[in-house]
Length: 196
Image (tube, rainbow, N blue to C red; front, side, top):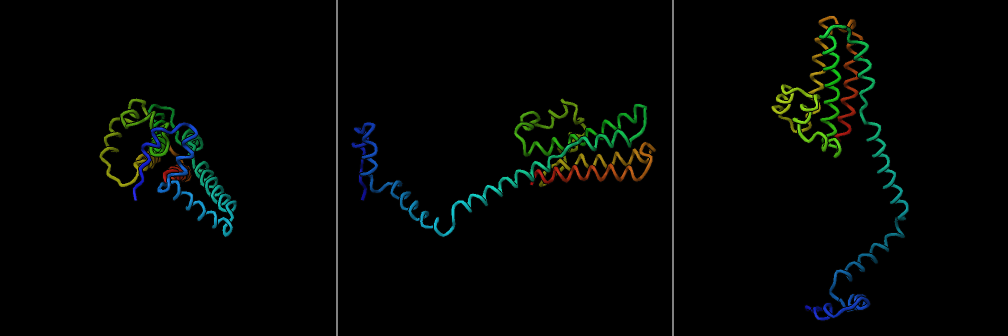
């Protein structure tokens, strides 16, 4: 049966609203009250403090895990400056490109997860304007089809350039090359965990 309250609503004053709710027999308010009574019966079975404690522990644990996975480029940049030798322009450009690739990895990762980074670098063109990416690199990334993020592409470039530096004798030891690659893979792994 449909009960109309149009006239009562139009004439209701401030204190008339609670009376109107009491008259409102077919409302969602009554359904909510019955659901609340139903849920209240379960609080005796499972204490709400236990559920809230579990929920808060889960949320704080997830936050801490995300915080611990924030990639920091400092260690990798220090290794690049120590292991990649050469006082000439070529050596400087290799070191600069390696650090630039590391920054590309982190920015491409944070574009998916951080609104601040997405606002600063909404497109790849903004990375080119900032000098973090070249127009050729932008073209390669745009033509790369992947169902997931593209943050792994600069990691590939990093590995290739590190191998070139080793072949040119700018990285004097295979152990230093391995250390660079391992550190980059650790950095890339943190970026992957951030995206999960």
